[in-house]
Image (tube, rainbow, N blue to C red; front, side, top):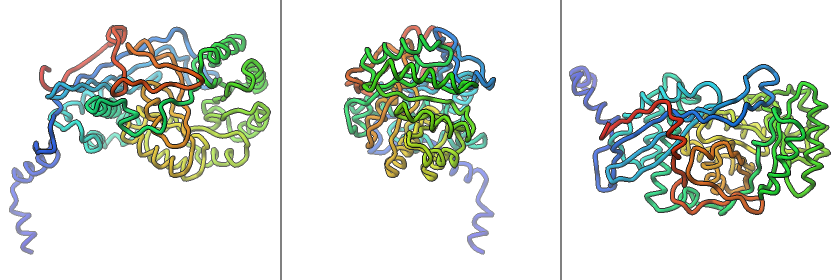
Length: 406
């Protein structure tokens, strides 16, 4: 009764003040030596050289891809340290990511930039009513990645070394030359050039309405590459279970490194059945947007190669949780897209990963990654090791600054 009386007489003002102290940035203590002073966010639209099509376009579910919207976050601390992070959306969603980032960016001001997990949780819960996956966490991802970039720069280390690298280079494969919008002759020429450029694998798109066309394209690329270069195929979720089994069996003669996204991304049980049925490894995960969704793939043993995408799942902080769970399950890993970031994360994964080579993003950054002997080399530059190019600044359609100097 006494406790109840005490609560009844607690003023609304005192309760509000207590809540404010709890949710605001921590008081500066001896362990905190810096604070976030300003945040700049930018909506930047990267134009592609030509329209790109995969199986989702052929089935009428999407239009050809002509541009990629990016959300960039640039964080500066009181001590003058800077970190850069980004998220992206293929086709629709970029405006929404930028809008959500605008709502939560000010919540970073005054925070200790080293407290990344706590800041991630704070930002996610700020928009929890619209979900803890999807667009909401993809906006958070840009800030989270910027904070990890900043932390690695503070340490004077490449991000891979800050996380604890297992290797200084990662096997890499190219995807950008194998889309269905290219003729078989173009795909074969691109595959040969990829091998000549020191990239260790080639992935081509499949999922034609006429599966015989797929088999002819795969056969042509396999003949051009021989046995020295790995070959993967990607159906972009457009097969049903029956087609996936039939195509999986037909493709076994080509000794593929994996079959990617044969089924809907959320069909964990179907992928598990395929993984048991086929000799060729199964890969998926790129379209999932949370740790919980990846847990389903791991729990069902749905994949041989798990393919998380750090910007899509909410940044490096949740990606590391997926890495730990996948490592415990002894899965291989091949992170999706954004090689500039995923090279570092793959280098820190315990079970011999692949990283996806896409040259699309190169115009956004001043730096370039090196490939040699079939592998991508972890750069020695501190942090992620990238800075925004003048071209990227020119493709920026909106930006906003929060904090000092705003």
